[in-house]
Image 1: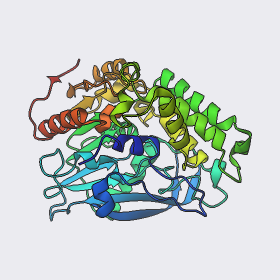
Image 2: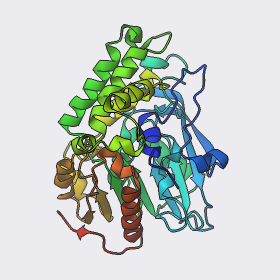
Image 3: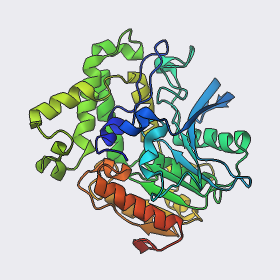
Length: 383
């Protein structure tokens, strides 16, 4: 079982970001997984992958992990797209007997976003696309690459569900719009179908803090811009949890002896300390640009894109999320025809959507389990 410290590891320093000549190691999600890696590791290579920006990557790589076994009918598949700077281990809190995803019955495919330092990223791509010259990849680029992975590599043409947290939720919504009917159900936790202006501004502030470090050198740094990385992490920290989380000193759940000053200093040293700056920026740009309304055929009409979603959707924002506010989620849900809108009652802000603590994990596992079984969950219909 995941410990409460998992979310800090996964969300805040999930993927080591060393330069291409110093390949990163995936984060270790729990003590149990240190002893036994539950997944099988895979990589799909796509030649001449054309991005939405118009740039063609000569070679694009998608790293992914699988859990369980694909049945003969190839119809027991659940897709788990990763979140910001995370590896494919980021959903193991949902897996196992008695949880929402039982590997003895399901085949789980957990993919890693472009820019996480393992899939194709600024840090591991050779010139002419190394570092700051790597093209901005969109959520739709990621969905397109994974669609090829499923259809061409795994020969899967239908999914039981797409379940995504944060940027994984963005991908889940994009799947529902780009490939209607490909997945029987969609689950989105702590993430929206569009990045709204306030979220764009917040991310721009983080990027500005990082790039202000002279060592960043326009992205052509010869050593990590440490001061910029610390500043980036401090901006991230200020938005990660709710104000009430800080007032109640809930950081002591994971670090009982820490004063506020000690907690801040600890986070300053550890947030994104091993991450590559260009990778961080690439995924932030992917996050900023997301809008299912920009999907070809919808001409920027978000409401029409959301109304096109034909399958049941479980929409689970965190009640205290500052990244993806519950009000934005409620507005979007009003246009989705078959939506169950179930806010997560948590003080843990954004990480609540990935089971930040035992209560959140229990609530998510129970709610998602019922939804996947076709049972009523919370309030069905438009909120």
